[in-house]
Length: 334
Image (cartoon, rainbow, N blue to C red; front, side, top):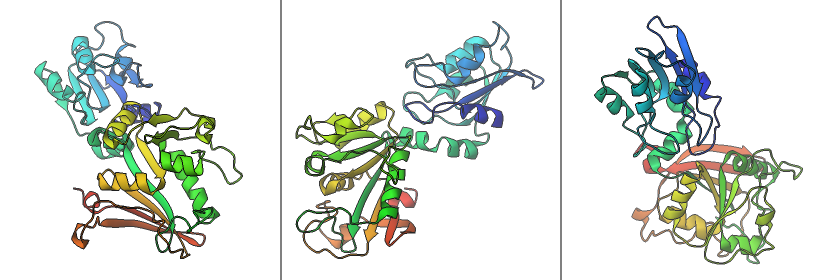
């Protein structure tokens, strides 16, 4: 199984499909073939391994795979059916496929008379597949909401000026986190007011090697002169406010981690909808006053309805403080 896990690491870390590895061994434990998944539209790990064998060579063999063989037809056929057709006698996997459409491969294999064992090195493989598994279980990307504010929760002064509330260390941390995300989202209000580039940059202003896909949500048109059009990746524009629909489409496009950075209106909408998985709150040691708050109405009418957070981590970044938090129920595993 560890050999299969090493093979899985050859696959792409981003995209719609998980990284999966497969090793096929004979009755004596000798390796007959190895395979891994190279990305959407290519052969899955099991089929990749089987393709390296002669007809009948897999009969009675054991297939060891990091993820439960899929049981659906997408861009490729079901791996469960490929293993059955090859005459494999036993299948061992680490983690069950949580997909509503792709799961069920173990059951199908058992129905065909194949010996199936699951849960081998499950903890290690769960950690390896953590981001893909989370998306599969949530049915949407992981959503991080970020804002930078003064200690009294203001994101700008009364005249609207906001550069720079936080210092260079905090800003550099934000850009590293942008680069680690698949996409970065803003609302049209922020886009029209600030004209953000939505890129991940180094301390000298150069583009980092990994860039998040820019995402814009809102009914107002994106101007042809907006800086987002200069981004190295094409922007995804949703001309509506349906967050659930937007997240579904982003998932279908292979977006696993969405970084929401676009103003109080969009942040508040995600919070109110219960669609936030974690928060990054950068606090600067300043007081601004006024009404330019980090978030607005989130549907809380009384103190008992407050959305409680679990503080996961506190970090000092120069003069600023980063609070990493999760919704309380999620932190407790609910």
